[in-house]
Length: 314
Ligand SMILES: [Zn+2]
Picture 1 (cartoon, helix red, strand yellow):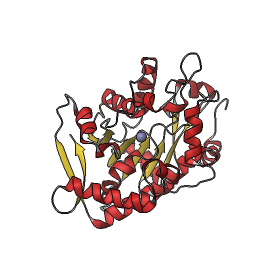
Picture 2 (cartoon, protein in one colour):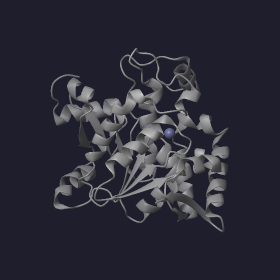
Picture 3 (cartoon, helix red, strand yellow):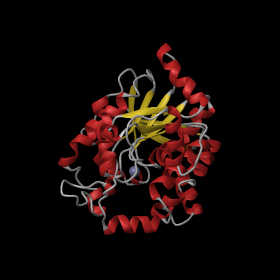
Picture 4 (cartoon, helix red, strand yellow):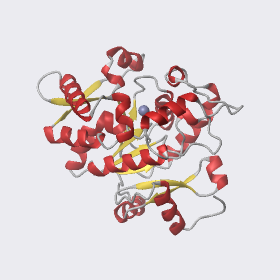
């Protein structure tokens, strides 16, 4: 990965990054050179004609997205907000889901028993590329655009000596490492590139469950502040099933809850989209049926009275 790339190389590379998966809805973010990769400066590459056209129109004050969802991992936005995304696109609004930890593991990735255990559970070749392809399939079902940032998942990130920074389950739900301040700055810088999307409402993770990658995205979103837009928070499923975890994430934040009421078709599309994350389902659910059942139950619980809902905070 050296020197500069032409648009055509980038397009070919984007397909390769996606394991041959071709999307007609999304953007991808690709490193332009080794140096760029190091500095985490990337090119935004609108892939579809529609996306490209929208992107070039942003200079005229046209929006490329009405709603932007910041997803720490390749599944969080859909698991947590898939119903409202379905509703927004059904109403003709443009939704962009930006997944932050969608990057390949670093060349000298932190190898740990934990990573091997997770890869065995996910049961896919090239886990990160497979997960990106799952995300595109899910977002295509929801008619949303995708943007994948090249930040590695915390399980792959090493400390200064090359050892895993987060070597086990306890660590990934523990404190965000002081060694990682530069990642917050880097992600904030990425998010600033979305500023041409003036006026879009931005949904950031509240940090329920305390996963370090969710903390990273939450901090970067706060640092960025979504100027010109509105910053709201969503509570992350499945962690939000635990009211104590929600309380902990809300701690000392003066946020007010708001319910987004969903129709049955919105919930059906959410469930179909969640089912696209094949490699991740076994972590949270015993089967597809169990997944559908639990998502329906949770949406009913959130609605508190009749119907179904997802909850956001602003
Ligand atoms: Zn996550």
